[in-house]
Structures are given as structure tokens and as C-alpha cells.
Length: 516
Image (cartoon, rainbow, N blue to C red):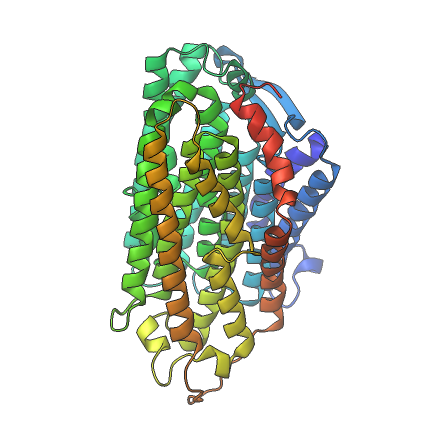
């Protein structure tokens, strides 16, 4: 188990180095480009298989205990250790990351985005995977920061070199926002480590803030929270996200929404809640307020983009929907209750599955019609997916109703548990304020349903009119890449205990200061 977790983190990095080397003669296939794309599928497939074996070997009777741990001294002077481990909170995120990266590699094998060298593309995707997996596996604050920052450069180049219109400004905006947030976050992490005498996240969580004064906790939560909020992204630090998603290639959008946004919310749960509980209690009402503003703001922005004549971009609309959905995750964390935090973790996974599928589908629509402009797609000779490509239209409608939180699908449970958590927040928090936040969040679910149904009506319905070239329905490789996401969305919706059985004991222990 120790070897498996270390392999999961390191293998993509080694695979990235190998991708840049010349392929051996027997593995070149028809051409070098095909060889390196097949290499990407092979490495991400091996990592996914190792992650599934890790999940199968995980002791599900004790999900609150750190398992598959590795603890090696790295920088003795600072007591920085190469400390890896996984529990019921991080394991689902490891599996989600490995799955989405493999599906992106598989999709790219058949539909490589236009851009420079495929070698560089595969290497960047693998470095991105390694950094994301490391973020969810490391248990040292400084290692967490290094892994957290490791994903920025590959995502910058994926947007800047393989993106669409206005890719350079979007890439610069992405890197500047996240780097500025990270500088502030590093100061907060150093403050905790120096004041407590250790950077070990397990020891700090067990101490539960007892070794830190209230003022140190408040400053640390403010500094670290800003860096995490940018990555989440929380309103009003979200403005890099729509531009990045609109410009990014399809697989870039899938990975950005599916796993990178989760790094921010994971940091709130893994670091701030157990290590600085008094500081979190001070800022929890403000975090909840920003969260519900994000829910309403994201929904209203989507409604504005969806209305006729707005020239709204469908990728941009899905990006704004992420601002709203991640608002629910932040609201659940702000309640500081097991119910709310479990809801936030469930919503994290659900958002990765559903929004990943939505970005795959929007990318396929843009490839077929040459545009993601809603007015063009809804025109008399536009998409009319139900008539022209019924399977593609049906899957888009499925993803849309999953995103709006239909009971029986994954999107429902996270939002519902978050609202339940806000109904009865942790002791010491202002209950009337959280009841107000709950009401605003519930209203946000109605707005989400409104814009998603408008998108389905405008893009999927309409008179079937064949254009000068026939439009292909779902291809075999698309079916292979998208089916796992749709199936897991249904499974998580019908059987939420699969996830909650993992997260709940770990969350209970985390909030109780390391006591099971």
C-alpha cells in the first residue's frame, strides 16, 4: 500500500520525462505523435489501475485512519518530511483525479487539440496529474504548497499554447491570480509551522489548534484562506475562471473544473478546519456569506448568458456555473459541522463528475459546429441536437439535469447536505445568519434549474435541418471517455453511502481534534 501511493504520485512525473524522450523503434507505431499519445494513455491508465487497487486495499472499516503512509525526513533543519498518506477524505479525490486524467488522455489520443508538439502536450498533462495527486496525498504543509503550485505551469501552457481565442490573456490572468494568492498562502503556512514547531499536518490536526494562539489562528486562516479561495474559486476572486475555461482546450477545461478547483476546497478541510478551528470560527460567517453571493452571482451570470441575443458562450456559461456549485462546497465547509463538511466533500466529487462531462460535451459540440455561441447553436439551422444527434443531445440533457441537482443523481446530495448543515451550524456560529444563508442557497438551486433548462431547450430542441455537411453523433472513443462519468453520476446519486461511508468517519475525527 505504501508503494502504491508513492507510485501513484511519482509515476506521472516519470512518465512526463519519458514522453519527451524518443520512442523506442518497436513502440513508434505509425508515427512518433501516435506513439507519445499512446504513451500518455498507458501511463495514466497504469496510475488509474494503481489508484483502484489502492482503493480496493483500503481498510474501509477504519476510513478515519491515515493509511498507505510514507514518512521520510527530507529537510531536517526545518523538520520537513516526505509524508504521504490517504484517508476517507482524500481517497475519493485521488480516484477522481486518476480517472479524469485517464479519460482526457484517451480522448486526446483520438482528438488532439490543435497546437504545438504532442510530446509537450502529453508531458504537461502528466505533470499536472502528478501535482494534483500529490496535493491530495501529502501530509506536510510545505510539501502541500509545492504540490499546490506544481500544477500552475502545466495548466498555463495548456491554455496558452493549445487554447482557443484570447488564450494568451486568459493564461496570464490565470497564472497571476493564482500566484498572488499562493504568495499570501505561503506566509500563512510558514506562520503555522514556525509557531507550532512542526509542518506535519497529522500532528497539527491532532493538536487541534491548542498550540496556536487565537490571533495566530486568525491571521493564518486569513492568509491561507485567500490562497485557497482563489483556486476554489470564491466570489469575488473568481474572475480568472471564465476566461481560462473559455480559452482552454477541452481536456484543459475538464481537468481544471474536475480536479484543480478541488485543491482549494480540500485545503480548507484538511488544513484550516482541524489546525486553526478558532480562526475558522471567526471567519466562518464571512466565508458563508461570500459562498452564497457566489451561488447567486454564478446563477445570474449563467441566466444572462443563456438569454436570446446575449451572444453567450456555452463554455463560459458552464464555467460560471462552477462558481455557483463551488459556492455550495464553501457553504458546507463554513458550517463546521459533520453534515455540512460531508456535503461539501460529496459536492466536490459530484461537481468533478458532472462538470467534467459537461465540458467534454461542450467541446464535442464546438468541434462539430465550429462554435459554442448559444445564439448560433439555437438558430433555425443550429444544433437541434435531439433531431440531428439524438445521443449527444440526450447526454447533454442528462448532464444538465444532474448539474441542477435532480434527486437520484450525484448533484443532489452534496447541495442538500450543505443546506442541512447551514440549518444547524456548529456551536458558537450565528444560527439566524446561517438560516439566511441556507435560504439564499436554496433559492440558488432554483436559478440553477432555470438556466440549465433554458440551455437544454435552446441547444437540444428545434427543427431538424441538415446543413451542408452531416453532423456525426457520439463516436466510439467519445462513448468510452464519457460513459464512466455518466455511470458514476448515477451510482453516486442512487447509492450515496459509497462516498459518505468513507468521508463521514474521517470528517468526524477531523472536527473532533484527531479523536475518533
